[in-house]
Length: 453
Image 1 (cartoon, rainbow, N blue to C red):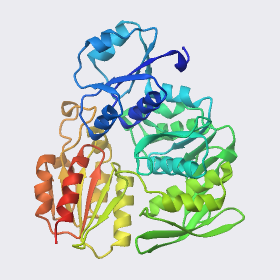
Image 2: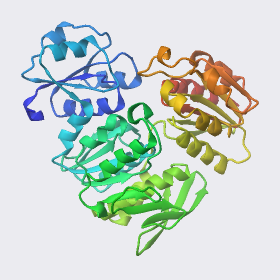
Image 3: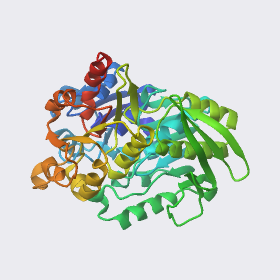
Image 4: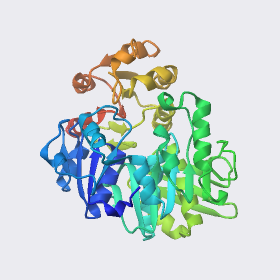
């Protein structure tokens, strides 16, 4: 395989994906020519075009593609795309074609790589690690799975000595990385379309953990059995590193942090949710061991603005609260809804949930139903198919899932009808949640509630 530096052109097949777009931004910032294809117009593809990246939205072999040559062009694709004429063209004409994960691994192999893995929590944790690196003025680049509010991007460049990467378990992508430091936040069953069963998922995370050369540089949430030496972290229970005394004062969350030998009182930040304190605990533990002092870490925690669609919260003059979140697995739903119920125990909660993937809905239907039962009222949107086809999952529909939910106040809605249905509901807290295109409701809801008295 040729070194990445030998290519001038980089063509991304599926450039609108969150991981793909971070790589595209990296090469664009490096002075390379970046082009790509995606089937969907989104806020992210619009931002990439505004940054000077050329994107096509039709699967056709145009002159821009025909003018590329195999000698100076690398084609990067996401495994979520199965069939595409553009991809076939590049393969038929002997272009170098690599998966996104392979290219990310090539970028990071010569850096001091900090990799954040886990079925839940990795985006917030990796974004926080990157922000703390920025606060400490470390020479790093980051590749994130969400839009960090502090960077207004999923990519940030402050040097190339250190890489901060979100280590994606989908398609075993994280096994292409060369992590020197790592966090494992969770290993719950997910992506069963890839792994088949929970035991295989656990083996995947163990294989990832084995890539970290030093156990003292591997931080794992207490209770996860990874089969090797690690440092553990936790919330509200003792571990090598843990946080406790969590309290909400005004609109801030306060907590205390413990190392094996010291205690540091009163970390303060504005990110709600006990699960997010757990993510912060992992980031603080790793970066202190990396050499960042606690004064800098406290300052960085206080200035962290969070991730778009990770418990994004708005309070309105009417007293209503709106929270938008990316959760798309029962464990994540439990964390988000559990935090809302903890901090707002007497408020009426309306949940608008969009299931993501027919396969995930099928595999975790009972878990989803149990999670959604904790709402006071539910609007369940049609399943967002992403890379899957309904014809391959006969009978797996939102109507089928709704039957498993025990709530009295529940209904299925299309995305197009959802906003009007929301406006008819009586609620104190509104939660829109899911990993598909439910985010298209966000701007309208904020505008409506801002004007509501």
